[in-house]
Image 1: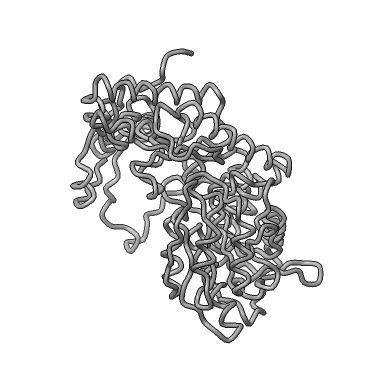
Image 2: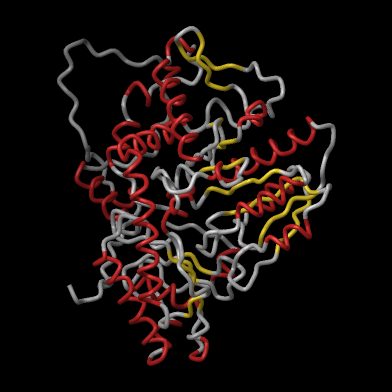
Length: 485
């Protein structure tokens, strides 16, 4: 298919249900009563709620039309990738909806929820095997809370050694929540500069690592989409000063089944189940951010923990050095079910192949688009590649304007202006499920927009022209938030 996909301008506008309904319409038919009528007690009656009278077809069409305003993975390629959304196999939704899981009350005694506890114990074992770190907690609700949990464990570790430290090293290519998580635990974030290849230089770590530094928070692969090849040396430097290495595992989608962080010096690692393990993350959540640790740090994990006792599983608080509870009950359990379903469905070979294909797709995009867009670092990438708008600046076109125009071609924009170490950054992450044909169509759209930037720049400055909402004043919108139907 040679034609570049895009929108035709068809937008199904839709009024509020209250504006559409008419008195007397109904979307259902009650069966004939086989018992005598009996009026409700006066205490249960009152003013009729303001609910519109609607036929069934009106309700169906209303929500179908509203759905056309959204863009999702069932619509097309989503170049933000696993950082926000990767494909969620429908079988995972089926498992999460099983009545025994979906209807389980969090206050059930252990004897009445062995199925849920067994799944949690099995998921912990699987994540331990994948990460190479033997102890896992499933409590954290998302990656940022996983980071906070990890920093609390760092704090507990140094406290157990009758000392406290005040600093934490954070490279410029770490995820943005890392310094915030460290600061919440009382640490002063210390930036670590990059070398000319966009990597952490062990020499810089050695110069900054001292007896007041608790450890390092390192994202690997980093936010430039590059694998920190000298992670073993960095870990050794930190460990020589009795510091801990915290691994931000949000980008495990590139190395799952290939690299086990626990074997290359990482002591604590959080995982984003809503990224690597294919559970929904649209609209801000819910998510899940399990934390895996090396054996001697297990005593600090949050409680209660799932433990086996006399042939069954129970939740135990018998860990006196624990950092305590970080989430009500046991986290977002339905997300855990989906992740477990994904892992068991894929198996070890499938998980490894997913990583390989994610890296292959990203490198294909990198090679196809370099020269069209300015490539930040011209070297093999992992699951994402980072470009900039420097080639388009001569025509007065910015990253934001290219992203807006991409919407007219039928695509959700990629991540823009991140990572901050690249001016005008455009981060593209295709994930493993996109076909070559879909990647080619996306590249053709980018190429067409770059031509427009040179030949008809005004079309970018006014974009998007065919979406439900056209160009807005983003500064005003941020300061004067006004949501409309």
